[in-house]
Length: 238
Image 1 (cartoon, rainbow, N blue to C red):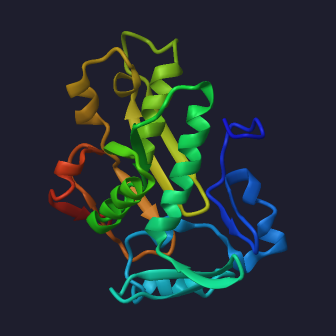
Image 2 (image 1 turned 90 degrees about the vertical axis):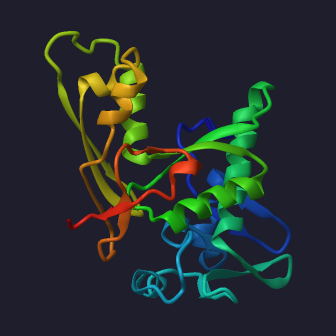
């Protein structure tokens, strides 16, 4: 829960002449200073500036995105009276630091975390998320696909799942960055089921990123640790 008591924390970073605002505090920047308020970071994270989908996206973004020395993306803003460029990993790290601070409001320190990523993320994009966690000073134990995270959260809090016939559930994620669909059975969602069975069935069968040309996604279970990120992939159109 964010500082204002809302259940969701928007992925926003707003820069000003005197300070930097994150999450709900940065919402006002969308109307006051759109050129210095960053959003849709997931569509820039780990991508090359020359990528066709990046070139299409930056035509609609109010803030400046330029090519970095390594061919990646740099987001340029006015911060503390200076023109400053940040990588998407640095900006994502700022959001993770904010989330870490929110999680620590009860007095318990946070050192480890599990991060969710879109199902269509490539290996480069997944490694970029791991780099962002490292910059933020948190230890990412595992990356999990967003639809898988939704299925597990549904199963953990759903107390009336039947023990007999399985119930098929479809999880639809219509977000600002992408459209994702993940079908699963009730045996996948039940928290008490064996972990191996959950891992075997928690694959995402369909995913379609917005404005993307069939990127690669990992094969097998959607629950990936950093060591398994280098596994082979399949295209979403196959």
